[in-house]
Image (cartoon, rainbow, N blue to C red; front, side, top):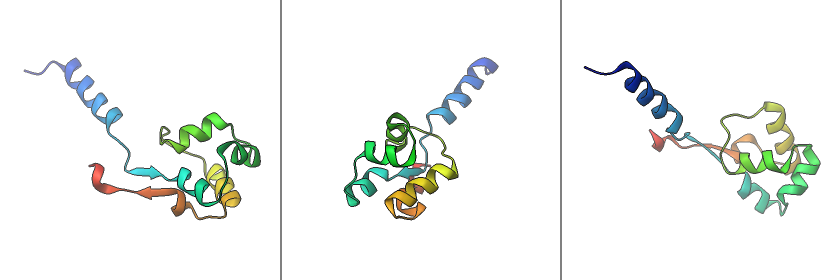
Amino acid sequence: MYNIKNYLTYIISYFILLPMAIEVNLDMMLVKRKMKLNELSERIGISVTNLSLLKTGKVKGMRFSTLEAICRELECQPGDILEYVPDYI
C-alpha cells in the first residue's frame, strides 16, 4: 500500500522537475542583432538579472508586455524568441 505522503511528494517532484517544452532563443536573437544583454535591458527597462534568467530558460512565464518590448527592440516576432519543442514529453 502506498504512503500518501510519498505518493504526493513523487507527483509534486515529477511536475516540478519536468522540463518545459518551450525553449527560449533570446541569445540567438541578440547575436543576430549584434546587441548585448545589458543594452537590451536598458532599452526595455528590465533588469539584466531577469533577462538573463529568461535567456537561460529558468523562468516559467513572461508578461506579454515584456515579450512585446523585446520584440520591438530586436525587431523580431515572438516565434523568433520562443520555440515549442514537443520531444520533452
